[in-house]
Image 1: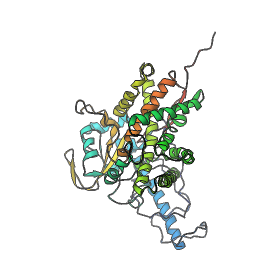
Image 2: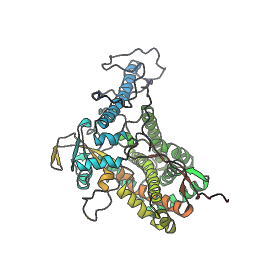
Image 3: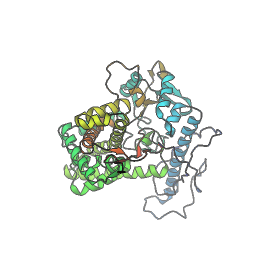
Image 4: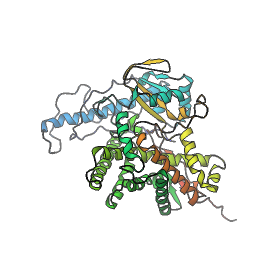
Length: 468
């Protein structure tokens, strides 16, 4: 696992955007430690920006109101600055010893240590530096994920970019009412998925998994060459996309990999913008081809497909890699799986229970409510440490794995995630029984939600000693 590099990150020079310009949060208080805050580049807006900016160096664009271009460019810079300040606040919170801040810093240390510190503080811990309530307790987590007093990740009804929060995924910033409306569209055999049952998806995923493995050399990256390349073609087939769209969809979808982490941890600004562009490309491709195939599919159908795809792709990849890693780390576990590949589904369920791919979720209170004996006002932010809650020793006996959250985007994609991951693991066990690690795994920086692998080098066979 690697710590986040302390590289500088310039503010955007692009002034052709039309994003609004809400006020950013107040800067975090200054401490002696130096966080990895991306310094502003020359030309960044001052703390009290003027109403207009010089426009001589701006590119020529065709917009209905050229006079608005300086203000739009300023808005883009303010969003970038908000990302910087939010990231700085998270870093300072960790410097002060706040366990939630340390989790969001996503450094090289084991996050389970900080998760257990949150548990030690009781059923509900308040991260004062980040103004967030945090829980690692199973019962409290279930209340947050099911009680109607809690809803999506941002302020009620406020569009992304106008809510004072950092730049993040628009597709994954939906509320519960929207998710409940879209979820039936993604049911097996429904308007989007041609497979009528989960087993059919698993069979098709296994077919694509074998093709990918056949194309891998003796040494390959399990994360990049296999796990991230598998969801795209499986989903493209399920959406019945035409052959011409398969390649583009499968190529662009992995570029949305930062979307889930970006919901709570501001990504480098260039990364955040690239993710936004990839999301827009995926959404436009699905809207175009689903409309052509379905005689004019509605906006909800296209949106449901995009939400499903973006929420499922990286989550599935992380679940595959994490399950392989956990099995390889336990003596005899991988060998038991290769002897009986039917155990793959159970291995995936065990990973979902003890080390789910999505380690934390956030919700916002829509009304005043009581949580773990604490009165919370409307607008309070609550973080659920999903991995810690899943292994809570105080959980009710026989409780089902907490796994993926039952609401929001995973209400659309959870069944596909587990199905594809199970099929991938079974195929690996059947075709590569001697799979082994071939290098040090690396965790992606700024990935507190997924702890996503940047790389996971493996070899298809055990190494053979040279003959003496």
